[in-house]
Length: 182
Image (cartoon, rainbow, N blue to C red; front, side, top):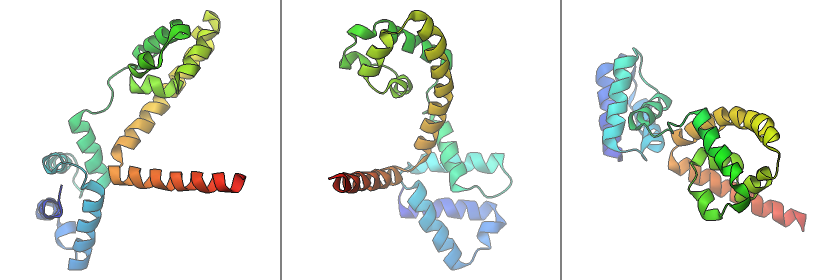
């Protein structure tokens, strides 16, 4: 979405919510700037639909967070795998883990790969007893599944520019930490 399209979205909101239409010019400019910064990575028509959804569902002006959440819901971009289905996939990987290759690991669903982290972890779990896998590991997996799902959902809500900026900061911090260890 470009700046002009952002202005159109704000105008639509102003036409439906007095709280926005009554804002001063500097307040509207700030709103346009912040909405563009936080929603500019999304397609204009998707934002428009997310705004309309918010206007139908809530009586007050929507926030950027509500618009991003609506956009995510409209695109159905969250995994539809259940915890038990994910565990079945994970268990199958553990069962064949001793022979698992990097290529096979890469074909797993993203959430299952996040739980394991690497092929090495799958291979280590494959050496555990089936009782331990079916009790301890399964329990850990099911607890972690909800946390991983929530983290993935929050990550999808962030604009790509924020993700990139955060990664740059982390990379700089890692370099500085490496320099201090010498």
